[in-house]
Image (cartoon, rainbow, N blue to C red; front, side, top):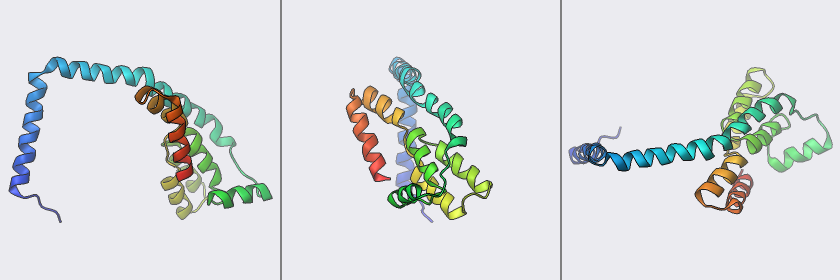
Length: 158
């Protein structure tokens, strides 16, 4: 078990008191920062996430793979079983937490095993393309190309 030394406890407590004091000493700066963050959230973050979560609920029931040579090739390339490849594609398209919800549902219905569900949850919970391209790329880095590169890197990493 990890125990903090007394010096670290006092330093952490002092830091917390300092931060709380700064909030009261500079309320205008805090207000501007929070207002700016809320504005970015309302104008950029939520619009990039909400459509994908609605879309995912509409497509999830229809994404299934039947056994065929094509599905076996896709499974071999991705490293997922034929039953979990749809979770992989949902994760790439819709992002976190939709893939986890689908994996849980498929496991509870007995369509995938516990180990397949765990693997899918670990590997398929990614940022959605809308989040990476439109929020991170466009709003944070001022470049949709950067967002596309980030999405491509994430996809290859999975």
